[in-house]
Image (cartoon, rainbow, N blue to C red; front, side):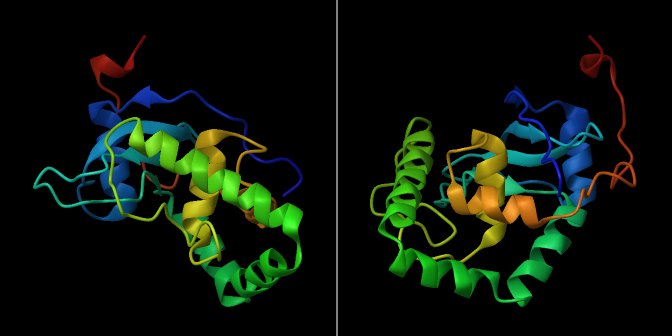
Length: 178
């Protein structure tokens, strides 16, 4: 894409946000804490989830990409072998590997600031491989440009998923109006 979506502020998830995410996922979101990034269409596209689900189950994926259009486009990248190519570059490029390790440390620090999950990995294969572009793009969107180099790269490969308008209708409630 020519220009990625702009960074947005983390905001508490409203009832309308939770409904939009449920529509995107086809189920109620689990462990929803906040909207970590908002799509240019207005809907959440990345949510922040609790490190432990309400039943106590560890959930190491702090940033969860919810937009089905973005998820579909990322699935195409994964099917095209982008993860394998990125993992090979990590092994051959010490500078990229160091930046990716820093992204891993950033991810853990953000998650541990909410609740520590001792012994659990960050996500997406960090710090040594690329296992899931969805997580890396979610981290890049939530943290902003320059934090996750491979998330930024994958994001730049995506089409403007919001260009056709919202992926789900957004309900408005009195709490969403300011």
